[in-house]
Image (cartoon, rainbow, N blue to C red; front, side, top):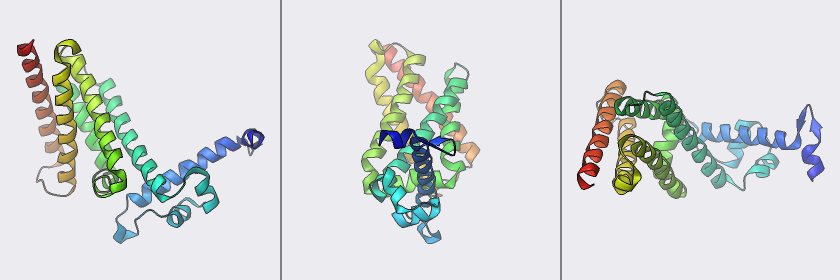
Length: 217
């Protein structure tokens, strides 16, 4: 088995070819899970194999079934969103207003510029019971990103950690619900106004948390 993984074919090892096939299956999963069922969406083994141009044999090389691929697709999209936010923060100026704007702009851009991502995050992530635990884990991921920024901008953990943790979950959950409502058409805000308002409020929440921590300390 080890030899078959290291033997090369057309310049690629078995492990590299398996990774490439897995990537194709993930891409097909994003396409199908992110597509409205009325337009042929819905993730099945047969549909994914057809979309990826692979046989079921290669599907089961990477995934045990459609449910496992669904989970992998959701994780793939969440990881992409977290990376987009982290990269934007790394490039932003080191002040609260700039970082608030960078956070909101990056998350909104990643989530809604590709309609498939928006559907996976805000439709499948809410409606699909199999993704419930992963959605909770994703909320924790974004809360941890917000908490890290709070600790860097507003004070040492020894004085404010509990408040930062509470605030970070409030912000992460609020942003998720805000974008869910916006993508459903429940808000009249334009994209630019949504980003501007959310960034201003995010900054105000951070400042309020900092004042509260200072008063308690």
